[in-house]
Length: 261
Length: 279
Image 1 (cartoon, rainbow over the protein chains, first blue to last red):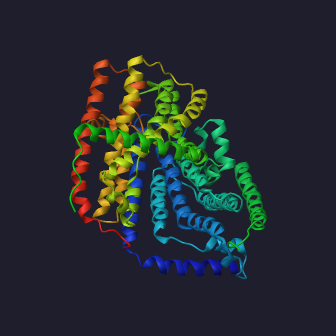
Image 2 (image 1 turned 90 degrees about the vertical axis):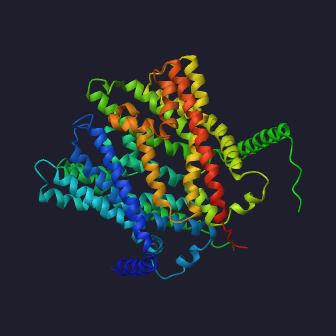
Image 3 (image 1 turned 90 degrees about the horizontal axis):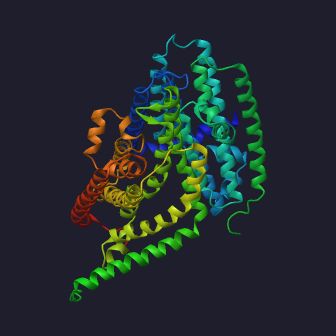
């Protein structure tokens, strides 16, 4: 409850800050449109040569694309800005200000920043997702949608954990930016169902970087492909990853030596 | 203040060659210091072609081994050579221009008795040498994993070796012109993204152009983008005749000249709008 209140407070402050720069909304709208149109052109190109990709029809892949864009928007709205600020503050010692506050340090480090205009991507992704769903043969059942929402939430949680683990590495390594570059590249793998990738890559983007859980699994839910063992595995892996992340955060925090003292 | 006496033509040319060699050398030693950072960057970039390769190979396999007449082995060769061409194509970005204009970073460069563009071209060219060395192990790994079909003739290798530098120059000029828009407005990210998206689709970066619809392929041939991705890759991977290969190099030279001229033209007007920040 307290966590939610804290998050809401920072969300309001961050939004008010960003609302001063309304022109940025239109810039973001243009950029998101370019990205969505490009993604759709790529899909059209692929499906001009085939009617299905590894068992996935065009509408089903549009569902995957929609989820990838939507989740990318979530990452860039909240997760990435917070983690970038965290890495910066570990380096220059400003994390002192967060650690001395009487709140849970991990919660505080995770909710301080919000870039509301980037959530345009969340809307854009949702539109693509809805369009994909509307083209599905046989439509989508209520039970599928009920499964989709928690799977997406668990997936987003895993992506958050991944980012926090990387950001926590900043307590040991000063320059973790390069790993971020790596993530951006790997996130693009989420555009396609992970089943098309060769084994080594599939395992990497499932367990090392949980992109498969975050994008392919929710897409499987929508397209009635999801098997119950996968659901169980996603919840178990999500819980384990979250526990590890929390432990790792406190472990890393002990290395923190404050501002050039 | 009197202008310094003009240098005779020959020593002016030698001064430029000297400048390029020295700046290239310092760039090489600079970048070798950051080999680990460079490596992370390059490995992150490999994700993109691997994704394209896997997608198109999947389609080719579904259709009995080839898509649009291109076999899985040829696709693998295309996207492995792609990784080197892409690395050659990394130049001073429009976002870099935005930063240097917005923050007034251009001031020092403007004081030097040499066009700032020379520094961009020379330093990135030096970095390319480092990139090529670091690329070799990556290429070897991709080669083992994806088993490409590649059997170039000597002239194809020679044309490729020239064409990657042509691609480098064309893309430098294209992105410089794009970046110089920042002299007029600082809200440029949407324009950049649009240009990069067009380039992605029409350059052969996304797919070999044969897989595009005919009208798009024809459009691509009328634009500079394909000479920075598709042509260098195809020179090595494809089956072009000698005349076609040399014609390609000529087209690259023409685009390089045209875009360099345009860059210098835009620069003349653009730099007048520069108002250094800070002092």
